[in-house]
Each structure stands twice: as structure tokens, then as C-alpha cells.
Image (cartoon, rainbow, N blue to C red; front, top):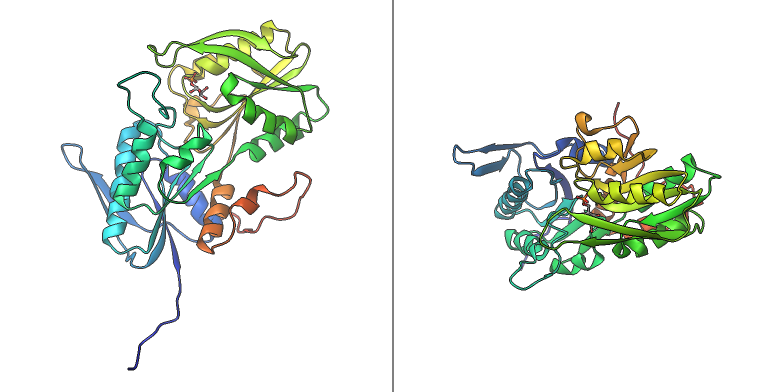
Length: 340
Ligand code: R5P
């Protein structure tokens, strides 16, 4: 027998949905590549069509899709892109969802409710995704919804280092807007050098989506700069009410830090009126100019996602990206910088 062999090689290809191509382009640039060209459009009845304009056979494919509103359209487009890659013989498909859709529906609060966060993972898997990469899940357990490897990235270092630099020397208290976010606030407090913690006791009416009743502040905030941390700002109700409670309790100022700026109406108005000194977000979702306030800061998640993709591609370690000490200023592994 005379077997034929070829040296094994992998091709990294990056694909972008249409929801937020700017972030995908930034990630591709950091990786030193470009997006694979594609055609995508809707039929008259709203059905989505996608075709890749180059071969994807054997590709290590990374499909990047942020899911702002209309979220269901972008979820469907992602599934269709994955299906197209599977049927065109991509070798491995990693779906990169910087904002995981339906994450808040991660459990049944009452009988006869869906667990839509799980459904999203099942759909991604059924379409053909082998891996999932995402940033700051609403709850860590959602990692278990996807039946395959999940790379769960954290924006905390990016956000916390901005706060630590800008507000160095101030008396900071890290505040969780509800009891569910206390563990995250603890990690923030550690990163900021062991600051005190506080949280807002909050209740929700399960019959009213996006409706919050804030009760009281637990912890010492008087005369202190409160760094209010959350995973997302949707309508801004949670964060605006928490900010009001903190000022009532004597906070000297409030800095809001959240990973995902969903910013559904009336979030912009609420944030403008709440009195917070700064609102720090990342660009896991697009923040259109009309939703940017003079005191909004948007930090790019692009370099972190690009590094994680690079690690996955070369069978390296994503965990290593989060193990660096805060005083370790050494260069990250991937040093490609965006082109001018
Ligand atoms: C709640 O558990 C989440 O972490 C956010 O606090 C919430 O979803 C934000 O929604 P909204 O801005 O509409 O209050």
C-alpha cells in the first residue's frame, strides 16, 4: 500500500453576522486577517439567506455575531451562518456571541415557563456549532447549557482597570445592584485592592418584565465613590434606581460599570437623569451615537476576544488570559494592533 498524506494545517477564518460588523472587523484586524466575504439578504417574507463567497472547506471557523435588537433576527442569522458552514465542510465552528441572547431566561421562576437561554444553546448546537465563546454571562451556570466547550470571557479586568486608573486615591465602595451580583462585586473589590462592598436589596415583580423595586442599601457608602457594577443595562431601571438609592444614602458620586450596553428605551434618558458621574460600558453590543451621553465611556472588548480566538486556534489556553496579576504589565500574547 502506498498511502497519500498531506502535512496537517489549520486555516483560521473569521465570519461576521450583519448585526455589528464593526466589532468583527476590529477582532479580525487584531488577528491580522480579514472577514470572509459573504452575501446576506432577506427575502420578501423576511427569510434570511447567507452564502460565503470563498471556500470554507477545512476551516477553523469563528462566527462573530453581537445580538442587539431585533435580537431574534440576529439569532436566526447566526444559526443560518453556522448551517452554511457545516454544509460547506468547515472543520470546526466556534460561535462567538459577545452578548449571549436570552441569558436572563436561565431558569423557570414559575410553572409553564420556558428556559430560553438553554434553547439558544440547543439551537446553536443543532445548527452545527462545536464551541461557544461569550463574554460575561448573566449567570455562570449558562456555560452548562451548551453541550460542548464554552470559552467564558470576562470584561471585568478591562472595566476595573479603567476605574482603578481614573479614580485612584478615592474612597471607593463597590456596589452590587442586587444580591445576585454580590459575587461579581467581590471580584471587583479584590481587583480594586480590597475596597468595601455594598449591595442594594431589590425585588422584582415576576409578572412585570423590566420592573424593579429597590428597597435599601446594605453596606457603607456615605461620603464614598460608589462603583455600581452589573452585567447589563437594558432599560436602565435597575441601575438608575440603584444610583438614586446610593445618593440618598450619602454617596459622594456613582460610577456605573456594565459589560453589555443593551440600552433599550428609555435607558438613555434614565442614565442621563440619574446623576452618575460616569457610565463605563464595553462594546459587546453596538452603542449608537444617539445613545452615547457625554459621560459614557465605551471600552473595546475586541482585543480580548481576538486573543481568546487566537488561543483556541493554536490549542493554547484561554484561561491564561485571565491569570495575569493586576500589576503584571507584560505584553499580551497577541500584539497585532488595529490598522489606522
Ligand atoms: C438583572 O438581573 C440583570 O443583571 C440586570 O440588572 C437587568 O437585566 C438590567 O435590566 P434593566 O436595565 O432593564 O433594569
